[in-house]
Image (cartoon, rainbow, N blue to C red; front, side):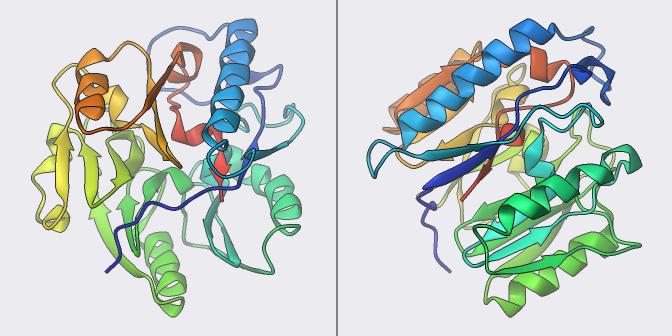
Length: 267
């Protein structure tokens, strides 16, 4: 099994649209401010470009803001990407399934092959955490077991390993990556609810302190780690491990149950 973190050359992003506040949320944190959300998204895009400087400038593909689908800024949920293959998701929320069409078109420009999750399976990309050659696939309120197993079969045909992780019933865990991230180097960031699970044996787990659970949704992008601003304990732990950290304000996306990883498809 390989443990390396992938090196990204491209990212697909979509700024929040005018109806962003009408999207799905269970956070109870109030309505997002669209102007502030767009500013935070712009800073996120700048950070992605900064992370590409070690190779060459990381190229961003920007889709126009969605109007028909309020949640469409969370592009990660629409696909799972591996070299040469785009697996088109089937979001668990029916109101989001139309988002996949726009993603399908643009990914066809980069990936020679595609596969897709079919009914009755459902799959959100936020439930899929790649750790080198291993994929952890969450079974959640949005991703059902049938969809997770469809993805696992596709991945194993590509000589990846895949294992299912049931997170149903865990408070605050909309998706697996709400509480889990891969740093490369055989290291996972995980909330307390996930850290001790047998499925993660063999990995070094960087635990997230109580009260900082939202910060577990961090993203390793080439040589940097993007983290949500305002969570100093996790940020300090990452710095001690030698990772350059970029802290970003994502308060308006948190209000809509979103995080850093949700805002881009990286490949």
